Length: 197
Image (cartoon, rainbow, N blue to C red; front, top):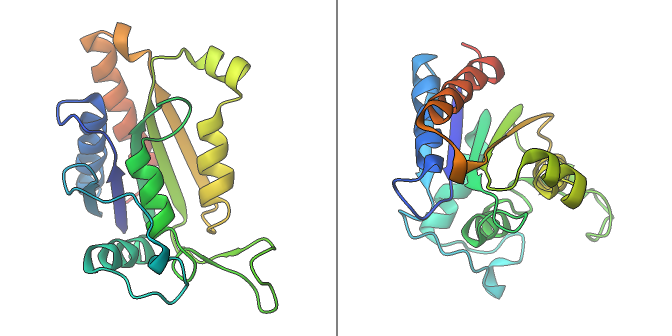
């Protein structure tokens, strides 16, 4: 199985990096082909230029590579912090530029873009790992858990990915080394559950 891991955190020493590496190692131990793309490390440009908006636009080589990897993926793992109830801008830009028409979704004939798209991704499952300094109960009760809606309904649901699992790890600022080790083990177990050998 080919699993694409997308990491969006600027600090190489972050727990997000540790989560992405734990996922990669767990997938490798299951004999999966796990590819990790660190958006900050590769300097991914999140700005969508007007020339890329058309469905059949000519894409820069790096962007075309990302699109091809997304199309080939049997599974997806997204790792990012919760910043203001949203992913970091670099990841939102990755969605804008890579999760594009003709790659991740299409509109049916006669639909000019006003309808509900049909998903094109072959990935059968996606896992989203988030870190947060907001307690989970407050996130749900006060903010309505916006990241759940973004990933499950607004991205993967429209792109044809039937299974979406999400785990929020926190509160990061008060977490202990023991808690972090337990969270990394949980991330590895989830890889085995969602992407079995």
